[in-house]
Length: 124
Image (cartoon, rainbow, N blue to C red; front, side, top):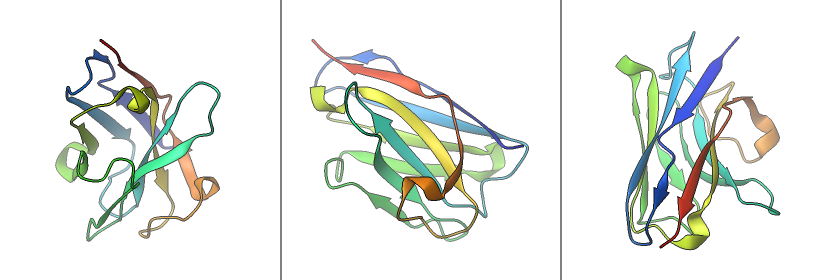
């Protein structure tokens, strides 16, 4: 059973930065594609970024390009999401998830395991 645990969510002012972590228990991150997602109240869960397995190519939603950076530390079995220039519309519960293959899936349902989420609030 794969366990993913997110952490790092907090209250931050607009323009601020935050780093989220996703720790994976039981398995190593290297092979599998992993993604970050977010869900704001009343909205559908949306993809934020994905980092592919092995090579580690990263993909980002247009709304976060240039502001968010996803990375992975295989030795620590942890994936990170560095968020900068945060906006109120970035506020949401952020989730990490892992797929069963190396390529980044096109759909949420293709991700097999999900963390419990961490709350990010952007407000002055």
